[in-house]
Image (cartoon, rainbow, N blue to C red; front, side, top):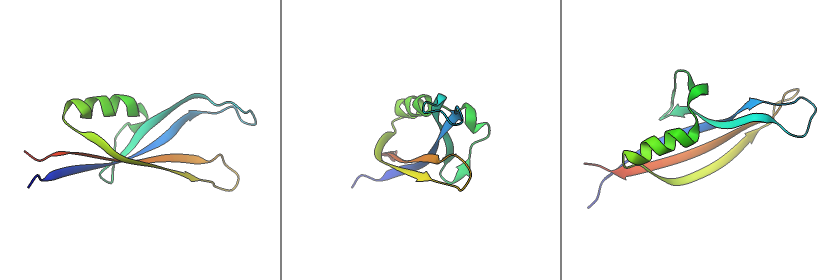
Length: 89
């Protein structure tokens, strides 16, 4: 039977918004946590680049869900929860 290994990511929508405006600017998804551990310099880890790199290592996305946290007096924080898997060697 095939055995699998998994990776759990939390990506955060990151960027500068125009306060009071409708359109945010410089927004991108950044990988903040991998398997429960915060990445150093996570605001430099663009989700697309991370998935491209892990895809070359045999990882594939098997599930993704979104979550938004709304805090009083601040802008909402959006997260993507992503599960990747690949066959164990």
